[in-house]
Structures are given as C-alpha cells and as structure tokens.
Image (cartoon, rainbow, N blue to C red; front, side, top):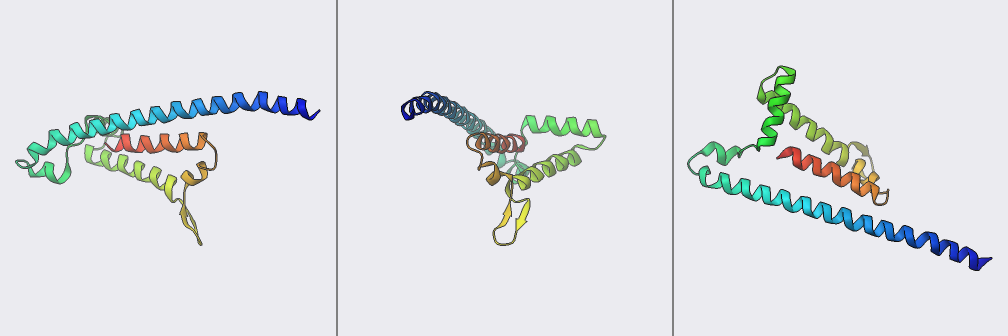
Length: 143
C-alpha cells in the first residue's frame, strides 16, 4: 500500500516539478531578454540626447520623450479633446496610481503601506509573473 502510494506521488510529483522548473527558466530568460532590450534602448536614447544637451538646455533639464510615449499622449489628447500636456499628466497619473496600488495602497499601522506586490508574492510563480509584468508595463510606459 505505502509503496504504491510512494510510486503514485513520485509519478505525479516529478513531472510537475519538471514542468514548473522549465516554466521558471523560460520566464526568467524572457524577462532577462526584455531587460537587456530596454537597457539597450535607454543607452541609445541617452547617447542621442547627450551631445545635444550642451547646446539645448531644455534637453538637459527634461530629456527627450520617447516616440512611443509621444504617440500615446497624442492619441489620448485626440481622444479626449485635451492638449498634449494634459494628456501626459493623465498618463503620469495612471502610472503613479498603478505603482501605488502595487507598492503601498493599504496602510497597516504596525507595518506601514502594503500593496498587491507582496500579496502576489505569496502565490508561487504566478504571482511573481504578474508582478513582473505590471512592473515591466510601468517601465515601458514611462519611457
């Protein structure tokens, strides 16, 4: 009886562990690839702005907005009938709300602020994937 139970557990547990390990590696390599691409894009962006920053002070102070962020703010401005500056403020407010939700939305007296990120961390693998996806979306939308 105990031998058959042990064989059943090993037969079901080993494939599950193997699938989880493979899924972890795939997700890990995907996020490393995404991080490297974002880093390369940021490096190109910084190098393109740096030489002009000395001659154009407004670039030194504010930096150059990425084309994607510019399109998003222009699209939002056109959809809502507002100017681009207001659309950028709306997009920034969305990013801040998302970051606050993930980091410190609920205040607990002994701990301080707690958000969805630590709660999602309690769910193995899937919670980490969701947290990393939301964090990546915040980073990509802030460029």
